[in-house]
Image 1 (cartoon, one colour):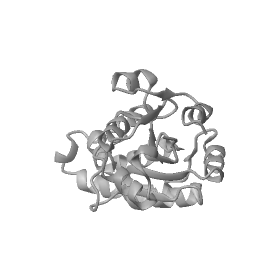
Image 2 (cartoon, one colour):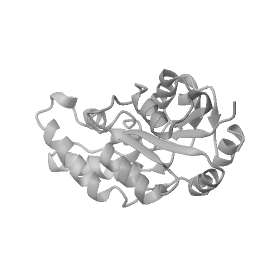
Image 3 (tube, one colour):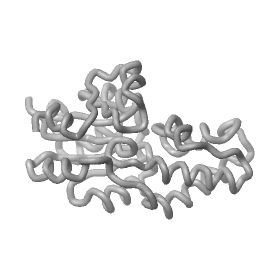
Image 4 (tube, helix red, strand yellow):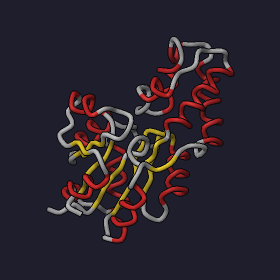
Amino acid sequence: MAIDTIIFDLDGTLLNTLTDLTNSVNYALEKHRLPTHSEDSVRRMVGNGVTVLMERAIPGGSSHAEFDGCLKDFKEHYEIHKKDFTKPFAGIMEFLKEAHTCGYKMAVVSNKFDLAVKGLCQDFFFPYIQTAIGESPDVAPKPAPDTVLTAMKELQADPAQCVYVGDSDVDIATARNAGIPCISVSWGFRSRKFLKEHGASTIIDTVEDLKDTIKM
């Protein structure tokens, strides 16, 4: 059965958010006089939501006395600065426009907090992305399938005609738990080698490869 619905991860798949995430992490850490991190270090921390990101960034994680304050400061800083350096990866806007014209239904599901997900999708991807779902108390985060299942329900999509596109091991597990195929992208925050080691069955290197893979 032909694919008619594409569900995307956000960070590392559609948007290169690494510099803004790193800046907000380091802002919070510096404010609380804690050691900061390089972009490459933060790259390895992202993927499981902002709470886990800060747990990984702070010595001692959530047990550190400054953890709650750091998390709060990160969120406040990121909400203001989330578009300072963030931009779509090469070819993404052209792909979304073409897919939209061809009638594909498209959604974003992310472990980034819901307000930021919806704001970024509105700012960068309107009107192409019809549904955007982020971290909230109402839905279990990835790799639980809940965000994907919610997106499919909102789009009135047949799971047999859906595909998931992401850049991490979390995305591979999420797609598997939702019962739909996963296309892993090598241009994001995890290497091709890492993706293979974590069970990726289809890895693509360019947006043109994505078009070929879904037979657009």
